[in-house]
Length: 196
Image (cartoon, rainbow, N blue to C red):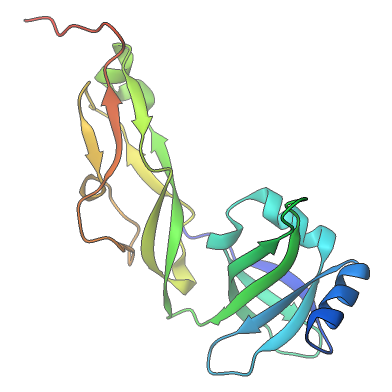
């Protein structure tokens, strides 16, 4: 269930401030900073094309990466922010946070729905109305789930799926205390319940 940890290659960046960041961008890099773990912040730069490819692949903000910087030990990081150009919507700066596998972190995890064909409500023409495509969970950094699975087996028209109805990955818990709705099976337009 846990996602594999991907490598993220970067170079140490000399100098800080706007001038150094602009120079990195001219050289084909995206400037960034690695912070956390009671260690001094480390300015870095990531090759622009490699970062853009990772961003387009999706779920970048909920993935744990193994940051490789030449001459330094590898460290696990998670992206906390990607600043983008307001016009082109392309990355201009990235913030990474150092993590240990036993650290807990709040992340939005994608929700996947299975067994559509085993739902009587959907077979009758009902519609699955998804309220949340992602749910915010508190998870262990070393065991970030790839997704949360919602089983639609036996769901009838009018059934509502709450977070308490979902089997969460081990060690994960919702960040919101209330029993919020993830999805429901809605009746098709003009549907009338027939008496047995």
